[in-house]
Structure formats: C-alpha cells, structure tokens
Length: 110
Image (cartoon, rainbow, N blue to C red; front, side, top):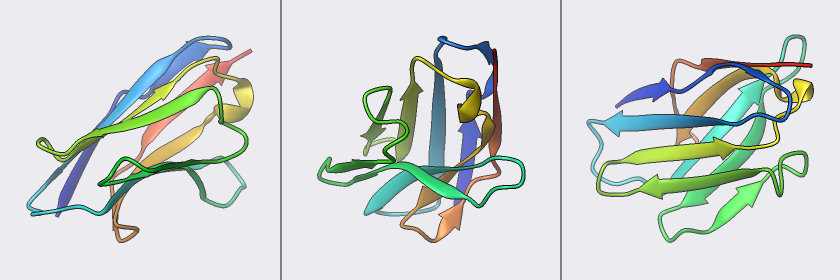
C-alpha cells in the first residue's frame, strides 16, 4: 500500500488549506483519516471517515475542518478553514488505522 499526501504549506491565521491523500495498491478501504503531530506533542487524530461516510473530528477542529473521500479514487481530503497557529503540525494520512502516509507540513503564522 502506498499513500501520497499533498497540500501542505504556509498560511496566515484565518486562512484555508486543503490536504489530499491518494492510496494505491489497495482494493478496499474501511477508514481513511488524518492525524497530526506538533513539535513536542503526541500524534493525534484530526478526523476520519468511514466508507459509508460517517465522520469523526477532534474537538479542536470541529466546525472548522471537513473531511471527505472519493472511494473510486481511494482518495481522502481534509479541508481546513479558519486555521490557527495551534494547527501547525505535520499532518499524516492513515488508512484503516494501519498504513501511514509520509506526512505533509502545515504551518500557520499569526
């Protein structure tokens, strides 16, 4: 299984970014998600989505982030709005809570 993430970058507080992660060499995926790890902190779940569309979000990103997936493309998206400096982290996509992408850095400046 290979995961290719993209979309990170530098943005000012209040701005938006969209992360994408495409999975290959896998037939079906139950859960697709995004985690993040800030310097000196543990990796934490940001959001995930099941194959039926059920979603789960960290309290800190509810009402600001949305997660979606394209099952035909095995791709998961994370739309991040109203970004805050506390959202600065390396974001990792995850498949079925087993496979990890390489991480993409999101930096939010104040």
